[in-house]
Length: 140
Image 1 (cartoon, rainbow, N blue to C red):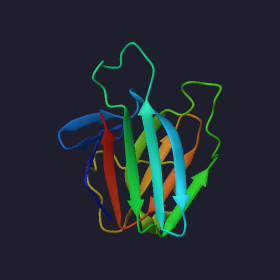
Image 2 (cartoon, one colour):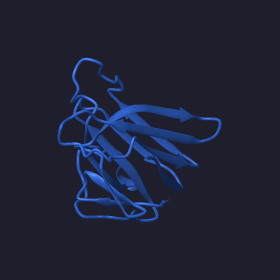
Image 3 (cartoon, rainbow, N blue to C red):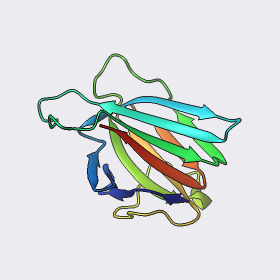
């Protein structure tokens, strides 16, 4: 896998000079898996809170290309609790160990060739994606 971003401390991504705090400043909006295009799109929208900077990005989208593995557990996006759709951790994890979805690899900023992208959320949802490339896109 390759990416156009780095993971910072398992809660943020660094993209084109932007330190994007996915845990504190964003909420998961949607996950879309297009099997025909072999593409997974994960969209985060700006959260609500007085701690969020006025100039925070409006949206962050992760587009996973040439997806060959997709796992989604407990897939209900919650409309009841604001914190439910909050990212807990984002990490790269070896695709050779797809049975393990509750661990992180601390401090790994870039993926190894055979890594998956692994995201966990406050509502206990796990998203795991094996693909060739992940692109980060932002909306100001």
